[in-house]
Structures are given as C-alpha cells and as structure tokens.
Image (cartoon, rainbow, N blue to C red; front, side, top):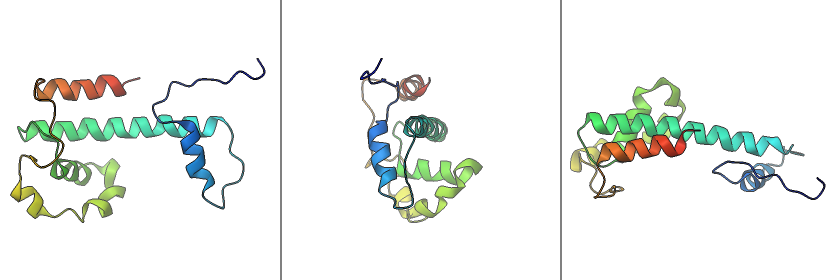
Length: 126
C-alpha cells in the first residue's frame, strides 16, 4: 500500500539509528532494512551481555548487578574483548569498596534476583 508505513517489532527505533549513521560524513544513502537489522543486532548483543553478567552476579551470590560484575563478564568472555578498553578505567577499588554493588542499580526488592534475570531473558528473547 502506498503511504502505509511498516512497523517493525524492534526495541531501538530505526529512525534514531539512521540519524546516528547519517552523522558520519562517509555514509551516503541507507536502505530501509539496515537500521532495522542494526537494531535487532543491538538487541541480541545486549541480551548476551546481560545474560552473562547475570550469571556472574549469581555466582557471586549478589542480588545487585554492579559495574564490577560487568567488568568481570567482559574480561572473562572472549566475545566481549573489544570492550576491555572501556572497563580498564573501572578500578578494582570500586569492587573492593562495595563488593555487593550496593551503590549501583538496585533491583526491585519484591522480586528475587533469579526472577529478574529470567525477566531479562524473557523480554529480550525473540
């Protein structure tokens, strides 16, 4: 149908991704499918990162995802080695000062941590 916009089932808006891509002067025209594919790839990457970070947090018997847990996940997984430069700035003193991650993103108190990790998996599973 002419004039009928397609709605894609993605969590990150393709229009925003297209704007970010067009800020680069080397990028010319962008096909309609490209921002949608990048959005889906971003969802899959975040799903993998959060799932593995949740596993690290559970192994530490913690109820809060902290920066130290994410750092350990990035350093231990070969898939995330390109992020090592970003997490090098996170000092180990932060992890020693607050080994349970209390100063970072507290989870909902009414839910157990396992149910929150399962919630991440369900909402990002497609």
